[in-house]
Length: 280
Image (cartoon, rainbow, N blue to C red):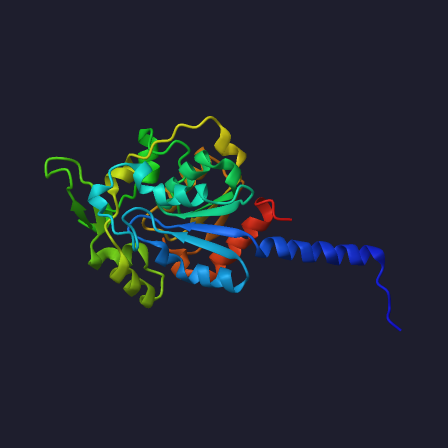
């Protein structure tokens, strides 16, 4: 004889199954920071796809396998075009969880302003979270890395001429691990050293956004990295205080938690999607 389950218990189980279906069809769009590319998310993408989630990793202009020269990318709109094109091409009723690392936070903010109805949740991972981009001195203080303690760390490109501001930048190989990956596996910092490319410095620092309050309709989550040498904890704390997100998660990580603490970062992203992404 088969024992019948109480009606209430059956309803609870059905709700749990529906929840799992919704979460597993969630679409995460992962955005890299300066000098990185879509490749930097390989651990997170693998964890997500093995768990049944849909994942898109974008190469911004001049990054990853995009063939553009960073010295020719002179505006933030041009730099962010691949992400905006991806979101524009989404089906009418599809929404995504948009995740930005480091300077990729600027790309996330602009995309949220332009496509608020297509974004369930914006997640900033050790990222530049500035509501209006670089508009004030405080924005530059909070959002631009100060690596002076390490010495002369940048290789600069001058696409507009030696007498003009630099158009691109990359951290010299001998400084990359100690600045960005000091707690990451050696294999990952070696991979990064092989794949990092100059980033369009002028385009990124010219990011400036006009918005009419629509961006605050999209929930935001910030993931702080406590051992970060690039966007230092005090800079992250200042940005969080100035533009408070819905939640702040904390990782004992270097600047690259996708390498140093991938399982914890993956857990936070899924938790955030469940808590703030409207996925019930």
